Length: 166
Image (tube, rainbow, N blue to C red; front, side, top):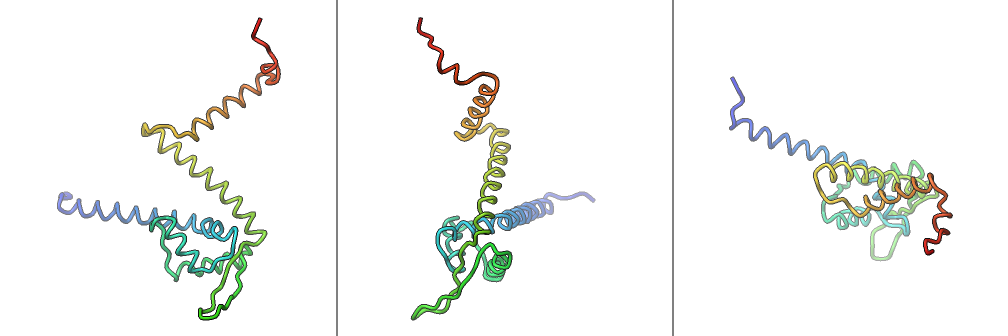
């Protein structure tokens, strides 16, 4: 007995949705640490504020529930990337504010670099192979590579000193 269109269509849609959801979940997991560290780079913030900033700046694409977000903050603190302290303000409930440690600053720098390289590589693959216009960044990279090759093959200073007027 073959697969009928009436059965195959809902199965196909369900599998595409499940696949997309799993993919999005993995992307979110892989970037959450970077997002948190970035948001507390310049000033301490409390957990709820961090979570809401991520949601707002991602225009609702990235949302976290308390059950998964706060344990992540605790793990970052345990790994000495962030340090938290309790702050009590009059008329408000007590909140734990997090800030980067020296180790956290180094991790943030490394993760930003790694993430930028990863995104650039993905864009080069998905953008160029589908006939999209090359980004300005790609052109800048191409020119930089060309200049490095020229510099390695020639004495760059002599090119600038050469006077073509005779």
